[in-house]
Amino acid sequence: MKELLKQQAVELLKNLISTQSFSSEEEGTAALIIAWLESHQIPYKRQKNNIYAFNKYYQEGKPLLLLNSHHDTVKPNTAYTRDPYSPDVEGDILYGLGSNDAGGCLVSLLATFAYFYDQKDLNHNIVIVASAEEENSGPNGLNSMMETLPHIDVAIVGEPTLMDLAIAEKGLVVFDAEVSGTPSHAAHPNSNNAIYNTISVLEWFKNYKFEKESELLGPVKLTVTQINAGHQHNVVPAHVNLVIDVRVNDCYTNQEIEKILTQNAPCKVKARSLRLNSSRIDPDHPLVKSGEALGRGTYGSPTLSDQAALYCQSVKLGPGDSRRSHSADEFIYISEIEEGIDIYIALLEGFLLK
Image (cartoon, one colour):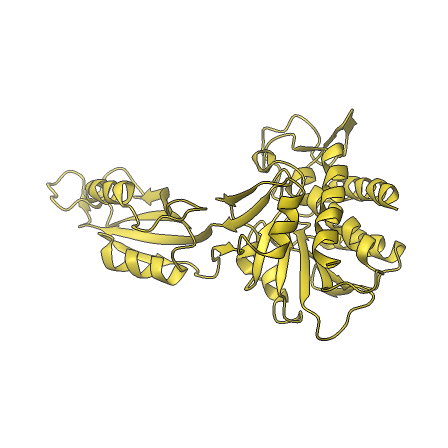
């Protein structure tokens, strides 16, 4: 059964690659996932472009395990030398947009869910969600499913991790900042030039360190990523606008980060959103122990995923390599998908059957 599921997973991934699925435009890939579930006689539900299904012997009162990965992609970058929508196979390599992030994870989790779908006497119920709008943290992605689904006790979020377990993940807060000055004609003296005032502000952000460091995730990372000011050469602008990207470790809540910067930054700052939280799972959780028993490593991840939408403990785990994500000529090894299915199944056998 596993070998057939592996073949079917790879074929599904080829079809997903062939179908454009930018964030909020996932109708085509949603239809492919529905067809795949129907071919396995698995009932499903749909909420916008999120497709979800429960195991056959779902039993009220059991804890719930969520399996999740996303089927949207970013837009292909201009450095592609291949057709991003052509699922070309060369030896063990499958090329195509979304192959690594996160198509390989999604099809591997679907195969794993199908493997356990009609098994009785599992100690957890299972729900799988093929989610939309992960890449743009949109309003109609996994976050929109939290009020629809029953209470979730633990989750596996499929992202490329080389099948090691990310047991913690940094959150994200994006701030808009404004440095003020006195607008004037460039020909006249001005001791309050907003652009010059920005120099010391940038130095402050460059040198600022948050006090608490995480054993798994290290320090909070603050980075100025955008700057914008002025509209013509002979006018000193009134304001300089900055964008600050803050990657939050598990020692702080997003609200605490907002308070610290609001009170201490040498300019006006305003958070765009506080909903993309850091996440973690107890290193002694049975799901983690099951992975460690298979020889899988554990680590803290600096990159954001749909874990930020969850309120429960979760791990990030999947075939592929995060360094290939959003790259030109994206690819995944077919053997990574096959191994991923084997490891997912073995991991859950160690977790669900005890």
